[in-house]
Image 1 (cartoon, helix red, strand yellow):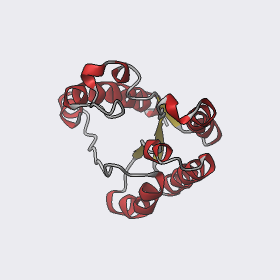
Image 2 (cartoon, rainbow, N blue to C red):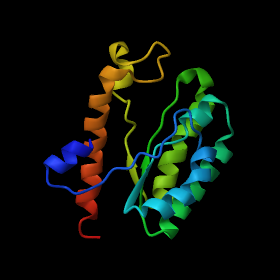
Image 3 (tube, rainbow, N blue to C red):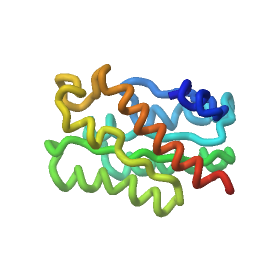
Image 4 (tube, one colour):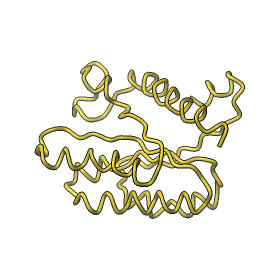
Length: 161
């Protein structure tokens, strides 16, 4: 994705601070240090799925995301929040409450909500690992293309801001 931005004449520098298997608590714990180190113009939060897969409370997940958003805003960075979805085997009530976190935060915190990156990929078994949750190597370029498209939309909206 970085190369695509450069090819288009966009000098955005992408920094991936993610940790495989991480939770909102882990992300929150590293955020202040990363904000200080990198001084980003914007931060994409793509966390919460592992919290849900561990059965963490909806309130804890939402609280951690709220704290992250507040910290990012305090550092004068813009926030992009990615919608996350979980498999239905966690129960309809939990699944719907979990998915609602992101929509609610996007509205209440006035942050840009990106659609779930696996919306189309997740229904194609050829693009998923055997666990049915994680995308495989073939899916990576499709994910990057989709995420980039949504970042481009965000950048277009924020050019005048």
